[in-house]
Each structure stands twice: as C-alpha cells, then as structure tokens.
Image (cartoon, rainbow, N blue to C red; front, side, top):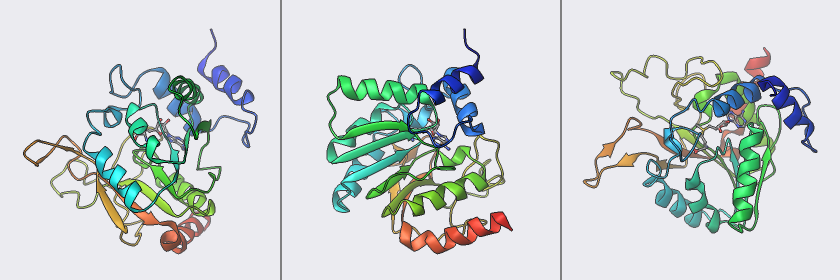
Length: 255
Ligand SMILES: C[S@@+](CC[C@H](N)C(=O)[O-])C[C@H]1O[C@@H](n2cnc3c(N)ncnc32)[C@H](O)[C@@H]1O
C-alpha cells in the first residue's frame, strides 16, 4: 500500500507534460482531502457540498445564460473537482478543459467523459499557482480561491492574465454582513485547504467591479435565498480590465 506522498510522486511521474516535478503543497493537501473524503457532498461528489446537483440547480441556468449571451465557446475550468453539475454546461461549449491538482480525480473525470461520449472535452492536472492554462474565452475558478492563501490567489490570477483568456469567472462574496461569522476573516489568511470567504472589492485585492455577477446560491421556490452561502456569486471580470491591478498585487508579493 503506497503512502500519500509516494502515491502523488507516482502520479506526477505518469504525467507526460508536467512542468513541475515535486508535489506542491497544494497537490499534497487537496489530494489528502480527496483521499479522505474530507468535504461534504455525499456519494455524489468529493468536492464539497457546493458541488452537488442540488446546490447548483439555480446557478446552472444562470451560468448557461451567461455563456450563451457572452458567446463563450471555450472554457477552462480550474479546480474543476468531480461534480456532475458541470456536465450541464459542457454541451454549450466547443471546447472544455478541466484542471485540478488531484490526479486521481482527473483520471476519473477522463473516464466519465469517455463513457458519456463527450466531445471537445479534456482533463489534465494543472496548478495555476505555478502554471499558465491555455487561452480560452473564459476561465472558471469556482470555489477554489476560498481554500487558498491570498498569495496563491494572486499568483493564480497572474497566470490567468498570462493565458490571454478574455474572462475570469470566480467565486466572490460581496456585501458580507458584519454580523456574519465569516466577516472577521474575510480576505484573511488561510491555510491551504481550509476555508474563508473572499471579496475582491476589498483589501488586499481591490479589483475593479466585475462586469457581470451570476448569483451562485440555492433559492427557495418563493424566490428567497436559502443555504449557508446567501451572498455567494460568480463574479465575471474581463482579464484585460484587472491585469494592471493583478500586476501591482504580484509586484507587492516580491517587495
Ligand atoms: C471546493 S472544490 C470546487 C470544485 C468545482 N470548481 C466546483 O465548483 O464544483 C475545489 C477544487 O479545487 C481544487 N484545487 C484547489 N487548489 C487548486 C489549485 N491550486 N490548482 C488546481 N486545483 C485546485 C481542489 O482539488 C478541488 O477539487
């Protein structure tokens, strides 16, 4: 029986195009979370409660509409996880590329795509902290940054800009109420794999306003927001609009 570290090394060696040869802390931590089923999601997904079909049922049509209105034909999904919900988005696209740091999850996603005969779909291990994804109309970064320290978010955003892609669609928590238990730690430091909320309009990010906001929450039949992520959204940024701020943030890391 291989230990976790040996298992990750074996998976990295199996990667033909790997630019990094040693497991990163992100790879080790998220593989451990995946192996141990540490996040809720039940039988359906190991990517957490936010990745179930139920919790994405209101988000899916809104994201579908955005994709159609903004003529998104190619999508790179970074930190794609293993959720079934994205299969409802894929048919709208010409090309879908899913990336994650967890190699086993990527292999399973490949098998699932093959079994379902999905065309224009590929999966591979990629970590945007260290690598630049391929150019696409949009990069989806849903429920990933909430588990990463600010420095790693900034490095990821810098690689998203470097990809030459047009839009970034990413989880954001605008207007977190001061009474919320998450308020104090909003944009605060977090250990890899742990959780805190992010609002990109606030320090240290101070990004310009998103060009579009997609509500990403469960909504009751009466229209009232439900669930624990009441103010969660997918904020859409034009990467050319945020690139100067991202560069400033990256430079501030070096200084
Ligand atoms: C909470 S899940 C969200 C999955 C999916 N985006 C969704 O919305 O259903 C977070 C996923 O991001 C992956 N992840 C975290 N940090 C990453 C990184 N630096 N590079 C690639 N994937 C990462 C984890 O392995 C996990 O599969």
